[in-house]
Length: 117
Image (cartoon, rainbow, N blue to C red):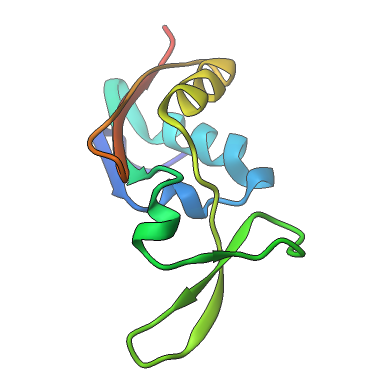
């Protein structure tokens, strides 16, 4: 149990980097960190972000990953799970959350969620 509880937990471009096997425990931790009326708010990339950020899917990776090219030309494998807004909302409902997830534009989505009462 966290030492403090929060009314709002916000993260940007983070959820897509949570490995699938840690997704449920990540949201459990968030639920424990919220005050009784608290909410999680987030923004992240939709699948169209792959092209926008010039990333390449690494098909042979044991977890969903992309190769990210930095400005200096270096290349790095990065855990990356692209969610469609409706798919993510359904996944969160399955974990006991009340989510609202919507596209911001062709590349990003935003959302808010709170644990079901």
